[in-house]
Length: 112
Image 1 (cartoon, rainbow, N blue to C red):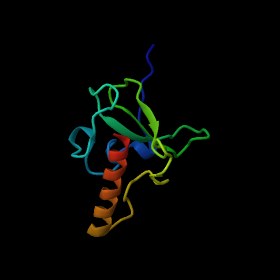
Image 2: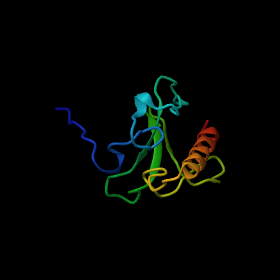
Image 3: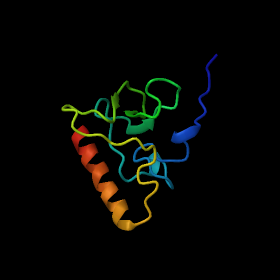
Image 4: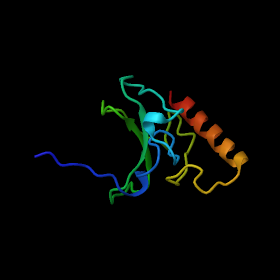
């Protein structure tokens, strides 16, 4: 018997590519192809399960090819995407939004 997965918590109601509200992965202008299979797109999710990694952000593939990477690691361990589950969620100015998008694009460039 297959168990259905119902999304709740911090991953619900936001884009799984850029973690912003008001759109979803399928309509995200910033979605990146999976670096492993190139059939799916990179999803940016937050661990919700009660564990040592709760609240930690990670990347995985939308087509479940097995791609996985913690978002606070890179080859040199040089960047950290922060602890917030909603990127720019508290920002109310256009300048802050632009700065946050710029930071996200730099992170995706480092990943690919």
